[in-house]
Length: 323
Ligand code: GLV
Ligand code: GLV
Image (cartoon, rainbow, N blue to C red; front, side, top):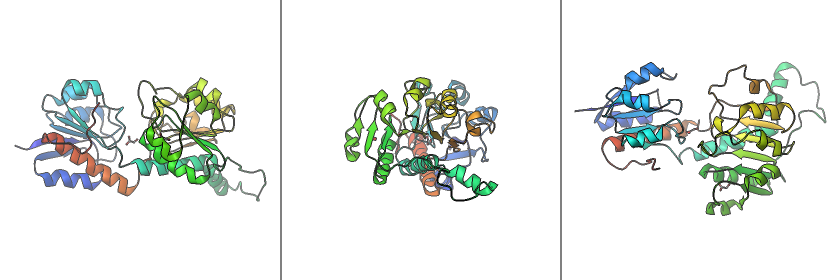
């Protein structure tokens, strides 16, 4: 008898092909590029043995109860798993797959792109060309901050912190600082200096947040954090929006407490078009596109499907989340 799978969105074809070729499951798909409404999610998971979901789907006790006792495996098309109620999932003996590593390069590239775009004011420049604000070459116009000779930082980093650091070094960054619970041996590859968070915040010209969202990092970048930053420093976040207190960030950006911010992640997502942060010239907001290259999304789709099948068939999963 075929096992039932619910897929919460259209995903790249790589994963769908693997699921149908396996011949062990009957796939039902929320066949749209838009998120599945909560009521449809609760309906779709009923009786499912496997769930393939995205970071925009909140998988909590209500969803798990709606799915019922068949549910063996949840596979998320993401490296982050803060949208999954892990305690509830573990309590029910459900296995979890995710997609670490395969998106590290793409996300590190996007992080560097956002850092440069923010520090060198690219969106403002593009806007001025379009709106006629470009009247002449002006010595004092659209000046920003450069990486060469600066102290740069991967704040509280995971593996992506190292990938970002490697890409920043060739720009002539003098020191790379990082913080977190423990020093990491791989930081030696980039001469990363392990420092207390306060030192990292006060000494850095660029702060890059690349940590995962946990109770420990929730709201970490708040008023006290921004008040310790240099007035010339640039703040970049490509991890999760909730690591930042956005009211405090708005205050720091509008008062000149810090120079600029580049965010690929926000709370909520999408961020409303009239949100105060969107109105600021010194804040560059991207729509969570860290992993968005064609090839990376294809590989994520492939991995998510193989994780799902591994879980359904009581085999090893290529990337199982073990906590
Ligand atoms: C992206 O943010 C992911 O978690 O995959
Ligand atoms: C260095 O930046 C690291 O990832 O530890």
